[in-house]
Length: 106
Image (tube, rainbow, N blue to C red; front, side, top):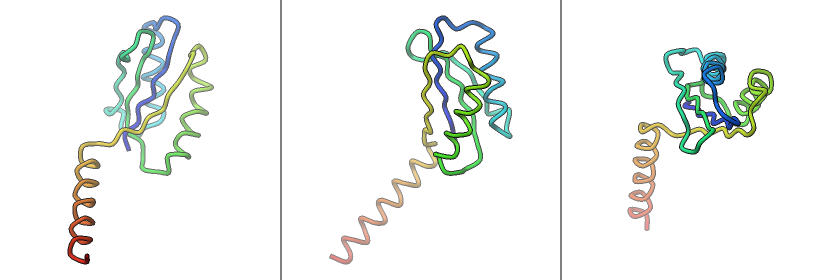
């Protein structure tokens, strides 16, 4: 599953960016999936990576525990699980199948 962790810093530094990258690498088995970039608002950095599929509440607990250890100078954090285009397409196809089935039955 794809994960985006957005972290607010007072004024992000290159060290913060490197720590975010190292943070992402600790949570993934695919180090090539780790990407760090500036957020939409000033002060935010985003680390994006993939994790094994697991219940999101368990993933949040793992991410939060590591955040507390690795990124002490953060001001705020959000954790997001954006769906991939393949997941969006699959959900759309399944919804269309359900609608078609209901039309056939009703």
